[in-house]
Length: 117
Image (tube, rainbow, N blue to C red; front, side, top):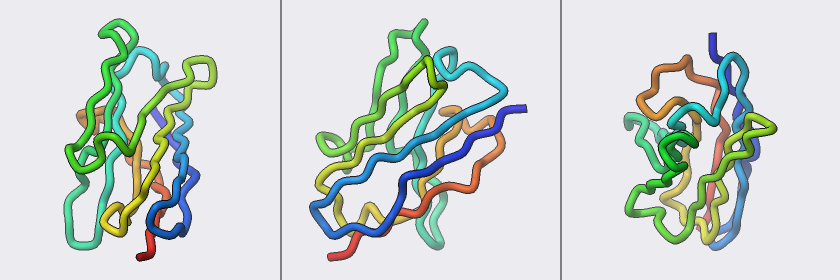
């Protein structure tokens, strides 16, 4: 069974930066298409960034609203995926989760990101 643990969230002012980490066990991250998802109260989780498997070229994709501000990356040796978030905006506030891009794994506890204006 795959387990993921997200960390790195916090409270920042608008314009600030955070780097989220997702450590996995039970699977090899480099062989998977992995995404960072965001959930806000009353809303469904939305995919904000993804990175394809190494075999598929490690192609990255982003939600339009985060393009140019967020960067997803993967450290294969550490079986970890990161989300570097710069120039944060209040609308980026939410709980961030990582999962296989089609959300086939069990969800972790997520990490809370709060951006104050």
